[in-house]
Image (cartoon, one colour):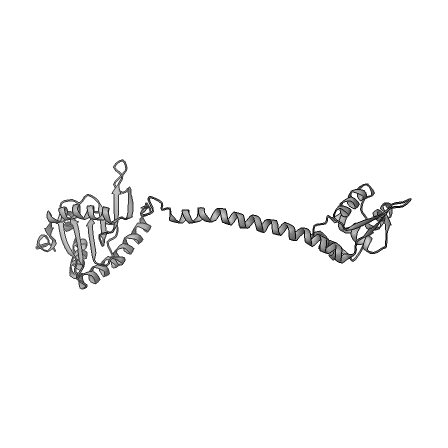
Amino acid sequence: MTGVAPLIDALIGLGLTQYAARAYLALVARDRYTAAELARASGVPRQRIYDVLNSLSERGLVRVRPGPVVRYAAVDPQSAVNRMMEVHRSAYEQRERAGTELIEQLAPLWTRGRSEDDPLDYVEVIRDRELLGERFAELQSSARHQLLTLAKMPYLVVENPAGMEAARRLAHEGGDVRCVYERAMLDDPDLVSHTRGFVGAGERARLVTEVPMRLCIADGARVLMSMRDPRADEASSTSLLIEHPALAQLLIQAYESIWSAGEEFATAVVGVG
């Protein structure tokens, strides 16, 4: 049986076992064999040869020649391969039908699933400080006509090029750019200088004794707010980025109340170095 390894592999690929493939190849090479002769020629253990022959016979790959001594002959290769292929075609067709039925059953679920919205899809919870800085910059850069900010100390960022560019752009286009700062910032010359830069870019600024939280509202629709954990230290906070016009409008009303109570930055900064 040397030199037939590729043929055995091919027959195994069509569904035969190793022993069945070896037996069929031995039968192909001779007109007929007794079971004992086939076991010797194919290398199939004698105690297994009858099981192997029964399997080949059930597949239609072997013919039984009755007589004083039963002999076995191979079905011609074309018929044998076609029969093995037919088994695979039949199995494939069954899987194809099952697949089609599965698609028909899953498709309505998929369609309904695409129409279902997570009730909190409009809320992003942010606890990482670096990610918060990125979201703050994105919010400012994406603003189209309004940017309202409460700047609570200590600031999330001091150098804020995205905010400076947004203030300059929105002011140039006639937008509404405002920020309410805490009065304590007047004690820090660097913060005063930084705020003057924003005012020079077009931001309107006012001062109050204290603002309740860090807050930024963009275009009356998107809100970024940071809330300190009342049970933890001052540095611990959770931030929320929320896209919800109704909430934004409510917070704008609160913002206007704080704004109206503030002092103009230009007035408060007179005499400050």
